[in-house]
Length: 451
Ligand SMILES: [Zn+2]
Image (cartoon, rainbow, N blue to C red; front, side, top):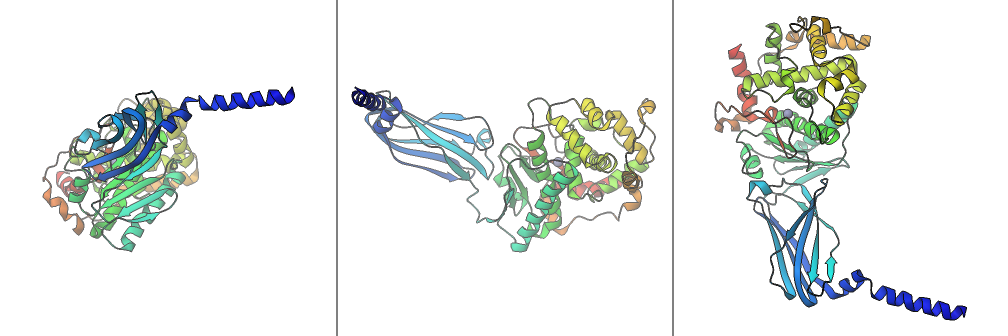
């Protein structure tokens, strides 16, 4: 009796297996061949050859950008039949389809035949690279640097600096990388523009594609110094956005840009911004922090001041309140807090209070109408001496910086670029004014004429 029971069970088990739909489907539909072919900025094409005992009526290509949640489902083009050749093409000449170099896609096919059998192929990953260049790479577990012009030491210098920038973000700002990132160095501004979406602005000097984990930037080997700063700046945006991304609110502009500027040189404001900032302090013409919370001015000179001041405020916070408080502040912003709430919770001051503390450190009077909000808390002696260094920034300013020779490529750009202001946050890419070649050239000289 017991033996009989076992036999019957086995029979049921076999029958049961035979009627599981997935198993039957996999036997019915066969993938003969599949592949991906791409030409950067032209197309990304997925192909499939499949066959079945009956007519195949549906072939969908599904893909997901690695690091993003959304899945895109697309009907492929094919002639229905027992054997099909299907193709799905992503037209990369259309700005709305643009994907930066280094985009990684997970993709799979869903195939259905007339008998209702369905087959989903296994997920595969495709790395979409700019195949017009022979890329050299340097890689570790958090970063891959790609470049095609310039020798090994050029690439190594950028790679090393990028790693220092990541270390600084961890030690001074309390944020570390969530997913590995890719940095692409194009050898000229023209090459960079040809790699960006056709909707990219002429003045774009670099772009951080936060949701793709990619930074692209134009750095000729003769522009290494500028390139080290610009790469650091754009990469900082990417890491900040990875760490603070939330569905509610972006960071105040001064904090986002200020961290990126601070990371370019943690000791002092870089030459692009120092002279105009120092002059504004001297003349008591700083912008208010509340103004700097919104998109920066479109005027390149005021934009330079906005960047410089933001960098100085971030340095002030780190030196005065300490890196841990800065880390707290960013964690609170990551939850989508309002500006004043986040500042009060992390630092004990609201936007005006922080503004006044910063102004006091520079020897400036409090903002009009806010004198009572201006108690300056300086937690440690170390912080006091550090903020004192910032108290006389004019003493630190060197001679008016001259444009670097390698930046001459920007001469082809309009003399008055008047770039539009940046959006407060963008899910896609962050073209950054501070990465601008025109600003690097025209900004300081013009600013000095103006003041
Ligand atoms: Zn920026």
